[in-house]
Figure 1 (tube, rainbow, N blue to C red):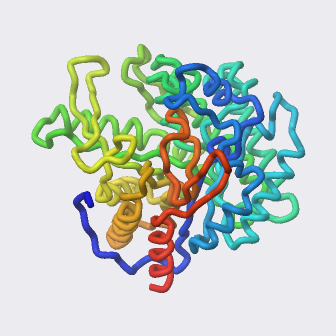
Figure 2: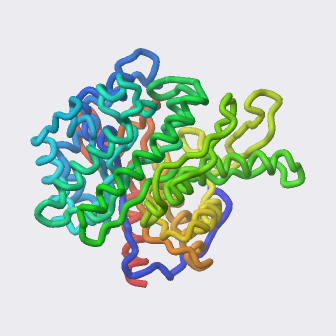
Length: 434
């Protein structure tokens, strides 16, 4: 069997309260009956690689207890899920009480299986009404999001605090990149100036939402984002231009958004933008209680003769089904980079597309070993949430990629555990005892 380098010995220093778990997002598993930007996008020919859609997805909306039971069988104590904004507010200012009630049932069920819910308020999708108003670039975006966030958090803490672990946005810089730089996701733009505005509005929305959620006085409240964090490695450390390019991308993609959430201001610039810099001023400092990190690998960085004069490529290691390099050792680097913010770190996503399930067991073991190394170096790591429990709709790639510990038969909506499920279960059981 093919393996990759970076073989670690399983370490035994994980905290007793370590958060072992899995995750997924609403649009990818619930189905999409309400109008959203992504629902419209999937209905546009040529936008989804396998021409599939998320109309039903895994039907988690109705089968959530099956998935929570699987997570309990796994030995997990944490489950990351998200709320679909388009379900809760299908039209501006109109709140769907039925949707709120159903999400409450889902989260109560999650807790009944002994799973701590980690709830993301926006995982890529926007209500169609907001998309038509300009989406992330709408002048009303920050206040609209804060209204929604306050509504959901207040409802779920009205009687007692059902959720203490919150995330405002999932991978904000990924939304900016694919929506406004490459055009691969809605709204399909290639406009660096709009990308800068989208990033600024996301920071402002996060800050305002956190202010409002904190006023609710939720017990043991923890608020963050899920930041996609890549290890940008220079093609050659002997080439100063490559080193500088890697450092620039690290600052732009990994650090800038986090820094802005902590300071309320930052110097922002996107390659290709005619705006040479803009000082964000969006509020007071300190709107992150911990830092969610989504880690999927490293990218090799070099300079280019074409604008924006920087190029990235996958590393030379073993690849998953989507062609992404598998590089566990870079997770140590990423944790140490993120720890410079001195916030406890939750690995909120880590996984791979592996239809035949030939790499996933080793992948999980080696990434958890890497986390052990990071903890040994002094990084405060709260937990590891594998992505994902079941196969699901993988955005522009559709239903073809298989990320699940549990295989989906979409024609029958049946679930079947893969061998990697048992491997992760054994690791959790072993490290819980250590």
